Structures are given as C-alpha cells and as structure tokens.
Length: 229
Image 1 (cartoon, rainbow, N blue to C red):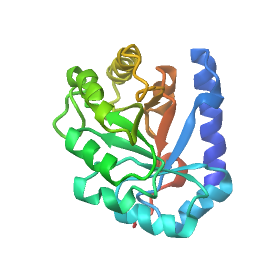
Image 2: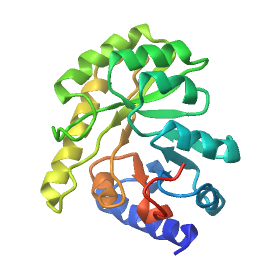
Image 3: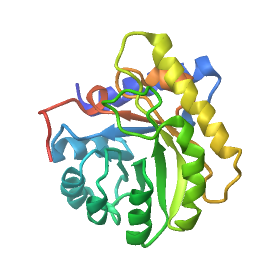
Image 4: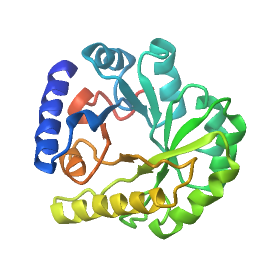
C-alpha cells in the first residue's frame, strides 16, 4: 500500500483509540520511522502529509535531511553516542534518547538553540533495551538545570515485544505515572508534556494509556531492507 493509504488507516485507528480513551486525536503526533526505507519513500511520506520523521542513526538522518531539509520536524529516536551529537544537533528538533548526564552535557555544549529532549526510560527492565531505570529519572532531570540548552519535553520508552496486552499496558502506565512525577517537580526547563511510546504493533494501546507521540515504521512506510541510510 502507499504511504498515503497507510497514513489514512493509522489516523482512523488513532481516532478510535482516542475516542475509547476520551482524548482528542489532534494531541497525537505520528512520527514516521524511516530507518528501513529509502530517501524516496521518506519523501513520499512527507508528500502524503506526514509532518514528523524519525531516524535511529546519524548517517540515515543526515542523508534524508539533505533532501528534505526543514520540511518535516526531525526526531532522533535511536541511541545517541556522545561523539555523534555534533553530527545531528543542528538538524533535529527532538532527541528521544537522553539517558545519561554525559550525553546531556554534550548536547548542551553543541546546541546553538534549545533542544527538546525526551528522557529514555527502560520501564520494562529488559537488558536488551536502552534507557534509565525509572527510579533514577527525577533526580536525573533535576541535574539538567545546569544545561540551559536542553528542554525536557517528555519521556520515552519501548514496551516489551509480546502479545500480552496487560504487560504492554503496564509498561505504558508506569511511564505515564513517571511523567506526572516529573511534572510535579514544577521545573521551568522540564515541562514534560510529551510521552513518546507505541510503535507499529502497539500504538493503539499506547494512545489509550496517554501517548502523545507514536513512532511508526513498518505500518506506515513499510520496510525495504534491513537498514537504509
């Protein structure tokens, strides 16, 4: 199917999920994850009406950014090595993978404007996943007061890849509760209004549990290879 048709289906699913949760569908940002597709497919996504693109690697982001520039809002959603910050910092609008103080300091050092960052949290506790332990998040956020170029826009997590819906929902609910804890700190640099959670297989559940950003790859733009730059 075309990206346009996929987008229509996803938007309909989002409306249904929001209706079930008594939410407004306009609150949800659809981030097209273009890691596994070509530049042409990313261009097709933007032309279909997608306004947010997400990339997992710096070289993939840079190659697509050269073609699309500032047409979409750019999200870096993969694990970010400190030494790679300089490659993407002036291209991205959001970084979804802030998970350590050394990375925060490098972002703050390299940025020439305020960067919206989401703290990545390993809610499920799986060793295969990146992110901070939930118990460490509030103290970590407080430490970011010394990084004036960082705005803590929200939190991000990945749920376990399982068919157990209750386990997935529990992961998302725990991140939502953690978001409320951060908001209750009432820090000027940490509005923490965004929840980036939910992918192709579980975005409907994520929305029902409070997601404001869903990161959708296969269901939206498909998959052309294992990894395309």
